[in-house]
Length: 596
Image 1 (tube, rainbow, N blue to C red):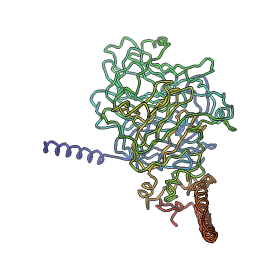
Image 2: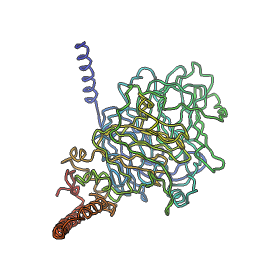
Image 3: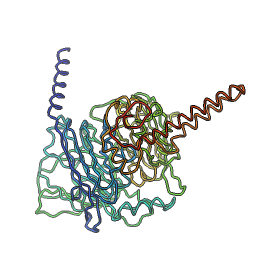
Image 4: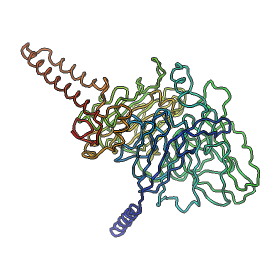
């Protein structure tokens, strides 16, 4: 037994060495500009393109490659940033991309470089993570190819298909109307549906071949039912995780979800077949007629007609909770930390979505910078601001998110920096998770892993992951309307370990330049909210004074005033220093990001 085991270890190690030896750097230069486009054939509007073209290009890389994306913001009137959806960014949390979380947004005329390793394989995508910008067009596929794909040899070619809802108005027009419209305001209904960013896609195929089809929902709002008439899809990957082969006639993809499937073509080429994507109309309450379907075609013979799809009145997609991961990874152990989130709405001035009654608002200082410059205070969630919905996780904890959707429609929830195990989900209207009547035995024992999950109306879900990726990661609804109105939480993962890992390493200069251009400080969270922790500490000290002698109280009070004067002076000095935006280092003590 020993020899085969050692030989197996040797061959795997040799393969890994060769894989990384063959790694290369792939560089993409993205000049982000406005481009007039008419993808639905109905209306020409400004879209956000790259290098003067729309739709944006696909990023392709192989496992082990270094990906470099050089961004030049030539929009003129908007800041921007890029998020690479589904990638862990392990060791490079500052490349995750959300504005005011891992960086300041890139101002018009400025440049910014994203550099990270392709350490995962599968189907991903990139998109703007500044305000509600990506529905205006700044999004594209990101594919990381796997030389040891377990389905290698079972397909002849790869295809990438995208679906997306589409709006004729820009987000700068739609968002204010939605936010200021009151409690009964419904999300704007899309004007069209797109397949591969157009309304008449033709996908050329050859008979008797097998294609690996990578499908991505890059939409802002609506989920999509997708089917190919006369063909069966064999699912082999979900959100970048290989799965056991699972056959289905129809899939459902919420915003940001991906699915790869094997498609076997017919043996003859006597007919072409519709590819149909239909927006989830259950999301469009109180809406009139909706242009919900888009049809493309699987074209065997371009000389033959393109048939009209058959009418479908009911949808029966596969339940993704029934799909098994290829590696059969077991259910993680019972959690060390449980986070309970309940979704609700509020209207105090502007319309807001909330977690546990608290709607997210961007902090003044990017949360990652606060984690890196707050020393031991980084473990106190109040440092990040009450409105960031911050939860601090210890290194390597098993974390369980128990989430309940009290709203009347579906919501897709995405976790940055991780895949989670979807261990339990109730049916629509099935209610929240109740630990008093459910046990570990009721959970999936080899649960599907993904980075975005659909939570139906009135249902609950239990998600688990291990906090093994120090950084600051958002957990949010991927309906852009809801993310923009507060349905966001912040996972501050192992901040002290993050400080230790980053000790002495320089933060890229363009991070500081982006903040300088925006007039944003870069150390601690300097809003009034960040002092909440200090205020609570003061209350505790005052409570402890009760019952002491008068002389002791006077001594303690004098000492307290002396200490607090020094603390306030130090904070003011640090704030002044933070504005000197020079070359910076991550440091493990409470300080600014620059070298003191």
